[in-house]
Image (cartoon, rainbow, N blue to C red; front, side, top):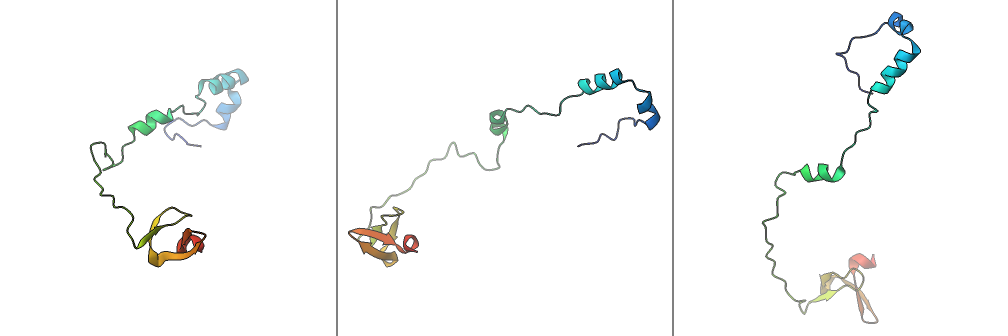
Length: 99
C-alpha cells in the first residue's frame, strides 16, 4: 500500500478521540483504490518507437519451389533436399520434424 508522507500524522491520542461515526465517514470518503482504465484506449495511446509501418509496402519476390527443394508434409515449409529425413508413401518429412 502506498503511503502519502505529506499528510499530517495522527497520534494514538487522536485516534482514540475519534468517534466511530467519524471513522466510518472517513472510510467511505476515500476512493476504493480500483482504477477504471479502458484497455483499448490505453493500447491506442501506446506508441512504440519506430513502429509506425502504416505507410510501408512490402516488396517480396516469391519464387516457385525449385527442383532441389521439397515441401515437408508435417510443417509445410520448403526445405532443400539435403534436409530430407525420409519419404514414406509419397510424404516427405524434414529432419526437424523427424526428430
